[in-house]
View 1: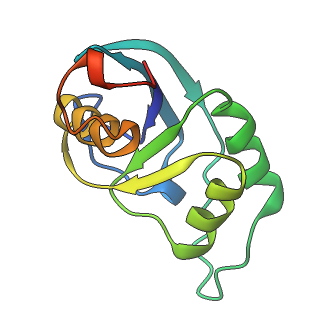
View 2 (view 1 turned 180 degrees about the vertical axis):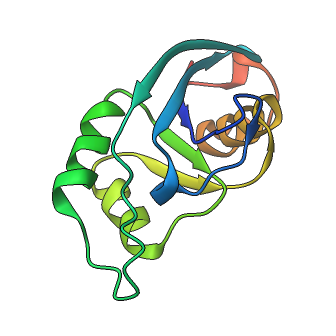
Length: 123
């Protein structure tokens, strides 16, 4: 399963979706994570208190995350989360070490309950 991570540090999920200027892309399968790419994006957030939906920036992020089943971020607003779902990408908010976040997201999305590759149909 391909999962994008919003990370400023490169070791933890520590960035809001709208503040991310890059996403680390991981392939997670059989309990192991391998970083396969890093994509640069223009920040989605404009710091405008009215929070207008920025279609150009959002569409570019969706294109950069092509092939990802999920994106993990420290925080994401309801509208971008909903729009990501429409694009087939689950948005998960959590913080902490990337490995733990990837394990959590994989388990939640594949339905295997963390019981290994034999129970997971998404690997």
